[in-house]
Image (cartoon, rainbow, N blue to C red; front, side):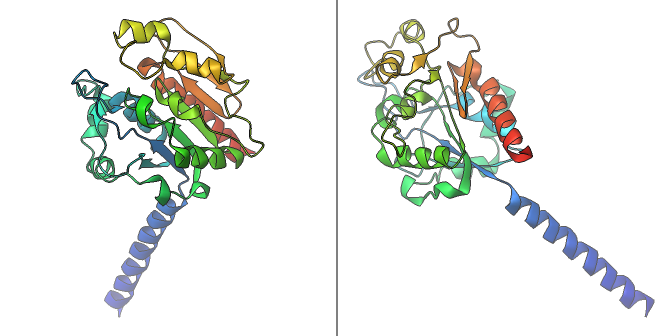
Length: 253
């Protein structure tokens, strides 16, 4: 009789532990990371894609509190640039089996329900300059998340995805807002001024953004309400920390 009771207790507590773990996993709010599907760096013969550290470092900051999902303009496997595994955060991200599975099977925009997400993050990389701005489906997803009190963030060339986001009043999301993004000086230093389809700094200004520029290739992060942007790869961690602060504040309120 004692053994029966003991076995029942073991089953009871084990079941509760499993249920609690599943409940905690399901109860995690979700953040959507947008990655480029574009792999050709203009006519240079070189490849590009999403910039590894601009996904890995925000993931590192946010992964404990939020489930990170990945979407790309075309869905499926995405190309990667800035492949530096000497960076321990990049290495942790890249060698994570779940991340690898996700990067090989990113969602298409049509598979995303914006209501599932408390934030959307546009990961940079030169590829974004070709396939982010014209993607209406991604712009609509971001607009819905933002208008549902969510956070929109972008880093480096990621703000290319912000250019054509329109809100319900037909205004552009970034019009009149303080924005950071890869600067003309940084593009020139990279030697790609004549390769990219446009200069991001110029387009942000044309769209009515209040462009904010820090020193070349140094951390520079700007917040304007629930919009957070970083200028370059060096800004990725700080940008994510600001996003986390906003989301925690939202939960507390």
